[in-house]
Image 1 (tube, helix red, strand yellow):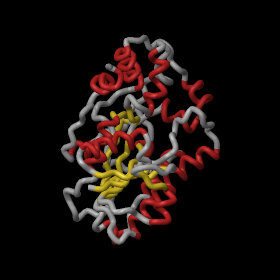
Image 2 (spheres, helix red, strand yellow; image 1 turned 90 degrees about the vertical axis):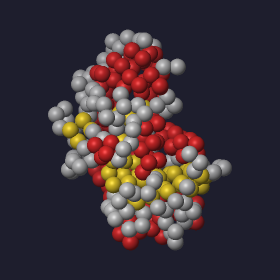
Image 3 (spheres, one colour; image 1 turned 120 degrees about the vertical axis):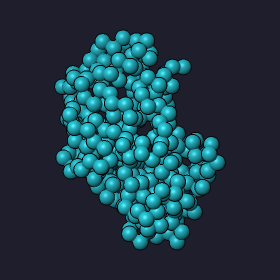
Image 4 (cartoon, one colour; image 1 turned 30 degrees about the horizontal axis):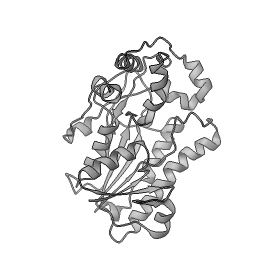
Length: 302
């Protein structure tokens, strides 16, 4: 299979590329910079979709970029980096004389309203309530293929939780303070912490590139990209401290997080959702890292 990956040079993209190539697939990355095995977004818009049987979009500015202030300019970039790249791929797929057999868009669980009591599956109804949920709403809407194309191209949306792995993502920012013994809970620590190991997210994406089990479905299939374990921020903090054999005695008050990140962005760390991968499990996918112990052992154990 030939697979085209938007944002393939990022944290999840690198993991997915390695997995697909191990399986014998050919991968082309869409990136801002040209290079071997790559095309640019300008190439896609000018030259159209290169021959491929599967397409994935992982592109998007990092939400918790510590070097960017939370202002209107940054919020606009968060939107455009996701919406514009998704629109470019959808338009390229729709105008192709030979569209791919599968189209996978990875969004986020921010669509679900934070709650300590509600549990969300892929079948849960939701309406936008803040900046991030509005982003997911427009993102997923932009990712829908025209009906005439959707009849022959499988559409999949994967809503990912916090992605954990040793070579990037949230762990990249957390490991140093935790290793120095400065780690601690964020806010109350009782907020749900929906997470997934990067290898499992790549595995779910790869599985979604396969032919649909029901080819009569033309609407997007929704899957939650989260581990089946339910954990709070406190449980994650303690598990990471134990894996590193370091104390976790320095909680960060919510007021400090809001002051550093801005109130809208701080919600990602101080609040959370109980999200279950109900439909993901129903597909038969077997998680490599279904619990925090196994995930963190792989990430920091060596």
